[in-house]
Amino acid sequence: MTTDHLTPEVMTQHVHDLGKAFKVKVTIGEKLAPDQARAGYRELVKQNRHTGEKFRVIQKAVQFPPITCEEQYAVALHELGHCVVARHYAIHVVDQPPLWRISIDPGWRAR
Image 1 (cartoon, rainbow, N blue to C red):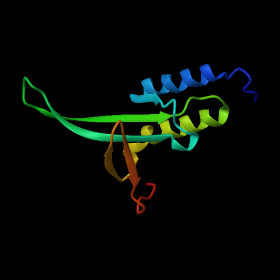
Image 2 (image 1 turned 45 degrees about the vertical axis):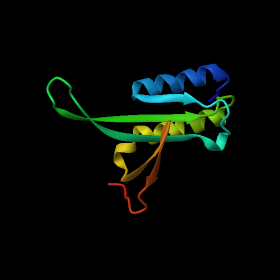
Image 3 (image 1 turned 30 degrees about the vertical axis):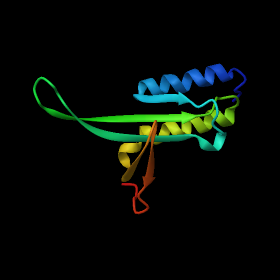
C-alpha cells in the first residue's frame, strides 16, 4: 500500500472530518511538540432553561501539533481514538483548560 497521495493537508483534513463525525473538537497546537499531543473529555450536567430538565453533555477534544508527516498523522489518529472509545474507560477527569487530562484507572479491564 502506498501513501504518496497523503499530503499534510489531506491528512489534516481527514482528522478534522473524523473529529466532526465523532463530535470531537480538533485543535492544532502550532507550538506543541509531537510528544505533547493530548486528548480528553469531560461530562457536564446542564439544565434546560425552559423546562428545568437536566441532561448530560460530554465535551470531547484533541490537540496535537501540525501534521507534517505520516508519523504525526498516526499520533493525531491515536489521540482521536481516545475520545472515540472514552466511554469504555473508567476515568478520573482533571480540569485542564482548554483540554481535560484523563487518567485511566489501572484496574480497568476489557469486557
